Amino acid sequence: MSPYAVITIVVIILLFLFASIKILNEYERAVVFRLGRVMSAPKGPGIIIIIPVIDRFVRISLRTIVQDVPKQDVITRDNVTVKVNAVVYFRVIEPLKSVIEVENYLYATSQLSQTTLRSVCGQAELDELLAKREEVSSHIQDILDRQTEPWGIKVSAVELKHIDLPEEMQRAMAKQAEAERERRAKVIHAEGESQAAQMLFEAAQVLSKDPAALQLRFLQTIREISAEKSTNTIIPLPIDIISPFLKK
Image (cartoon, rainbow, N blue to C red):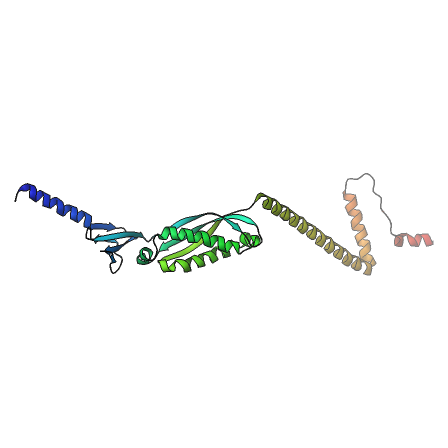
């Protein structure tokens, strides 16, 4: 056998080994098809051997995928048009199903997320959408998880990012918030006046029962007035004090 033939055979063997040996990372699995039929179970991680031409493999990542859902035009239950976008966190837990049951699980999950987002947000009123984001997100996550389960995908979380309101709705909500703050201020002021009146009434009842207490309060008031830096001080005398002198 000539040296050229030996070199050719060695090169063919090396090329065959190079095409046969594949290395998968810890987070990867390979679904192998042999003549169109699926092998028993996904292979990996580490080194796997496939037969060139006869075998074909699909590399699947098991890491969590973060997928941004584009802004969707949503009409809420109370007929308000808003734009809503979200973030979906999911990962493949069964590589075999993700290849066999759906053509492109990334695209399918993205489309399903958009339609589910519009459907769930359209069933809620605007106030619920703004105040109960966690409940809406949890509801979307439950629906997506059930529908993607046959594809071997687990949806771990869904988070609403932004809810864009029309400008006229933003102005209306600002006016509503301002009116609410004014109402609370008036209520607090009225409650303070009511409590002050009640306390004055109770104080008047206490003073009316004991004339000496009234005199002490009068003297305390004179002391407070004298503490101020005023030039003239007018002190009213109760009629009870000067009545004995008037009788004489």
